[in-house]
Length: 163
Image (tube, rainbow, N blue to C red; front, side, top):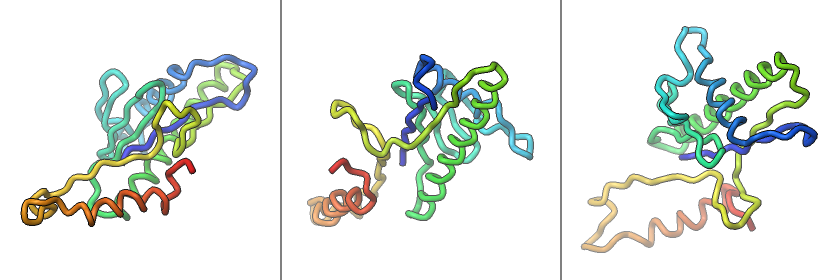
């Protein structure tokens, strides 16, 4: 699953750059070490990297995004999704401390983008599915009757659509 995060500030009085905020959050996580001394982001290049839990973190169109590793079940996916929220909250707190040290009068905010305000964009939570094609095919036909209802009903029940 891939989660996109929106970045903003608490006050509209100062101008800010989305890209600077997103890269600031990335750098905050990159420099953070947990109690065991290991970095949060274990590998990165050009604001694209991998986190210690196997998730991928990167910046796309000035938005920080975290993609979970492949999950075997819904509970595992939920665990990684909550971890991505934790990591972004940690990054926000670190970046706000840095801003405070520079006497900045605003605070960075970050939240999940489960809906998009502009209709020309599609942002938010989305996922990819890996299926064993041998199990998904029956007598040369794809089992669309199993997958299509799931793909239609899932976002409705998980409230990930703009109605």
